[in-house]
Image (cartoon, rainbow, N blue to C red; front, side, top):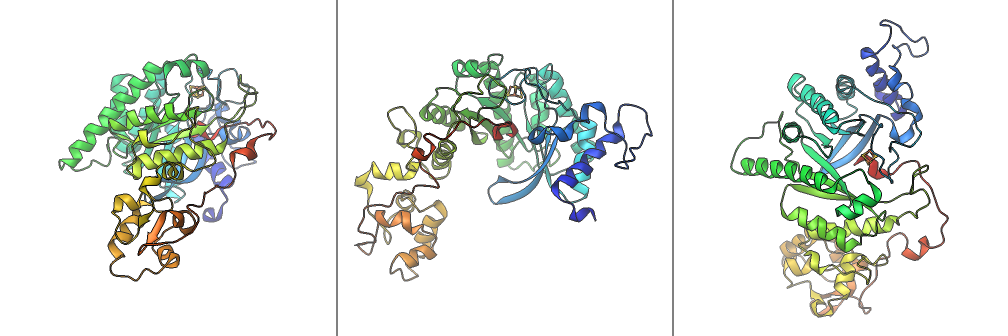
Length: 432
Ligand code: SF4
């Protein structure tokens, strides 16, 4: 039963769907698999681990939305030589390439079996970016305009795409993304000397303007064309963190500046990992906790109404690793605490560590109709009592004698000191 196949078996079956378009003698069937042999450019697809063409991932592309996506790496070949990237030109590894028709056949095969609901396509850049963009557009156009697929498609735009290509691919996609990798040109040239920051930024800006225009048209009542959603799910962009000397403040400032112009859903921060057989193989990995802190800070900006200038940084301009950004802000503003649960505004409550926007809303809605006696009652409303207690009063009474309980996360920065150097085969950021 196909329904009971494990992930690896599913991916193998899906890969075999590429064989229908094989290069070589037609009609040849492999006695081992019962299917036609894969073309030479896909023969090593199972030998490249995470850099293989297919994977199935459960993601949350939008808040409250769970979706299983077929992740397609159209090719792991690249003519660029970015120092941090496992797919860089000079690295020895088997290269694979899916043609647009194969990608479409595989995706429709996965969709019809109920193994995925949406598609995420990313790619290396073998040769001219314009040719790669043509292939991406061809794949999306086949799915939308020939096969009538109205679901979610997220596609990576390649820096250097032509204007008309950016417009076409954005019109076909639910979400487009572009990886800036660094917050400025000087930093980018350190880790990706062949890339041009101005080109990447111009490509991102063009797509962003299209998304903003499309969203505006929808807000004025134009119904969504589900075959041409125009990127209205919002763009994403990625920064590699720690491969350059850029501080968290610099990254946050660049991110905030881009958010302000609209059209961007969120940023990805990928903690640098040294990859075997790359120029940065001996560089230290960036603590995963730094990436986590950047996401927390980003969340404060997007969901909690914090301004970028309110974040607390250390002398080097980085977010403290040992304290989450919201706690760091609260500790640096003793004049704002304690907050009285029974009377505080929603915006004051949401500033309390351990109280999120939904919980603050619930407290304001329910505090006059339910009896609140102590931490147990607040917990039932969603308050994370261990973090919030030191910052609150209830009916004028402090809920904890200590001023606050620091949330240490699952490890502290110090635990990273002295750990042996680990070299990786792949970086998670490769797939965003
Ligand atoms: S980061 Fe992108 S452009 Fe650079 S080597 Fe990797 S796949 Fe190629």
